[in-house]
Length: 448
Figure 1 (cartoon, rainbow, N blue to C red):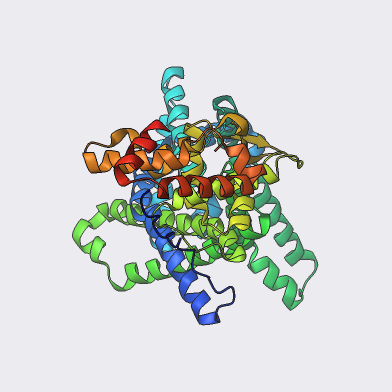
Figure 2: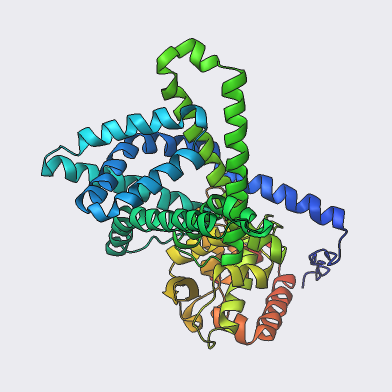
């Protein structure tokens, strides 16, 4: 009998300090935010949205103006909306020229035939669809809304959005005028509230955008923080851009009367960049709140995280509502959501988990039968593909792995229900392997 080899010491995961300093938390969260923004490639996305907006802004405005023209009752709403866009969303140096050109283009577009008008509507919806996809990418949404639902939402935005916005702006203007005309000297608080009314409306509009566009549950408090931050940043950008155009008229000197076009393009790009940063802030806030900013990427991390994920889904299988959201999984496992979503996509492709929509939220549940799901499948999917061994040394290593994971008793159910049985089985296999020679060990592994 060969001499029994000494039992190898199995390395354990290093203990991580639960408590850390304020400076350490700040540094880690800052690195997380920077990495997340870098992953999103917001500069390129803003460029794409700028190009799409330039193509779609005239068709979209033509559709909106046609709706207002068809109903003379809405003329005041149109004037209120146009005045708001001119004074609040663009620098004063270009706002009047841009709106004048856009109105001229839209007026000409309104004389198109039915076929031409249908293309205008399609182009407008394409812009909204691009925004929808961009926001869902920021929130790592893997499943888009059903096509029919998306079309209804897009059409509602194109048709009802301008009317509702114009009506609210008109009502706010009338209220302010009536207050100033009949009340006399208003209190400082009331005057301040009326002066900041455009800011409040814009912040609320961005908050609603962050809540309703992503196909994921977004808390209103997070959306409101992002909406206020986005509106504040846009206001600073508008003032800074206006100052630049006034003090450094580079574009005007180079392009002359044509300067409105590059200025408008630059403004549109910077505006989209701010909006995307605001959306990214809203998407990141839950991670910062739950301190889920630590990425756990190491050799075999996907495999380890998958086993932890299965244990969590198995534990919560009987709760109502069914399944767990990505926020709940991230909070329970202390893993970064993007890392988990990548893992969930891999497991979904393999038929192990499935995502469902319940109460408007995406939830994840087990889709496989743990009793007949061998652990060896996870080794192939997440650790090493044993079929790709192309050298004697690699095949030998794969054979040894087979001996440890291909045992018929090693199922997912055993791991979840009776992990002590797997521990005893692993000790049994280790003892058997230690009593034979290396050549016999390879033969033993192949037999398993």
